[in-house]
Amino acid sequence: MIDRRVESEGPLNRLDDWDDFVEARYPTPGAKATEDFRKYDDGARDGVREFYQLNHRFQTYDFVQEKKKTYLSFNHSPMTVLDAVDYLNTLVDDSDPDIDLSQREHLLQTAEAIRADGHEDWFVLTGFIHDLGKILCLFGEPQWAVVGDTFPVGCAFSPRIVYPEFLADNPDSTDPRFNTRLGIYEEGCGLRNVDLSWGHDEYLFHVITQAGCALPESAQYMIRYHSFYPWHREEDYEYLLDDHDRQMLRSVREFNKYDLYSKSPERPDWSRLSGYYTSLIEKYLPGKLQW
Image (cartoon, rainbow, N blue to C red; front, side, top):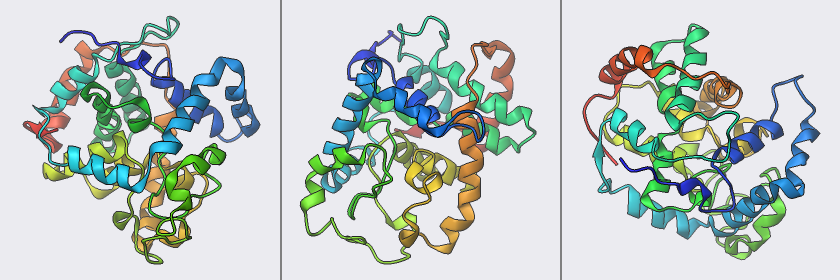
């Protein structure tokens, strides 16, 4: 496939700028002061602020319904998991010469960290595929509709969402249907009944579940909610949860450790690892998926 320099087409120089911001905002306990994330407010990180301004302004309830209608018909491209990895690999980043890793290598770093800690093979595969929904960029979606902390739409926005001041520009914040505590939802309705802002997490969750994947529900929660930081890190939206969500929270938090803190300049050797990951794919997500 032809390289496509999509990551420079937006306020972020690269999609990983958002990951770096989140890692700084939610550091490993004891590793660095939480306040250090504010370094992203300086001039060198203006792109992060601009990204959140766009994300918070345009991620409305109606926008999410539009994107679900567009993408959950699964009529873009049939691809195997490895086809999707190769396709994602055409997202080129020329801006980070010190850690010049491909998208596939970033996925492998997460998965290999999980594997090194002795977790089940389905957990390892979850680490390998969890960001494949970022191919939305290659389908023409803007950065703010692909990455970013996810949050519920259809009810009042939490002040614990990052840069909450930017949500004042979201039309839903003044819409009486959506700006109350529960909005369109019922107390304790469960996250499965709540619409989150659109992005790669929600998209990949639907791609794998409509394919009838054999990954356990814990893996599906990890994929669907790994960017829902207002829930699993800020401990908000308790009033929307049901008991099953509370049970699954531990799994999402366990995955989050590897999602944020497994980066390394060391390049994984795909030629050595490909056989292992191919066998996992054949076990849990064989054949072509509809994207």
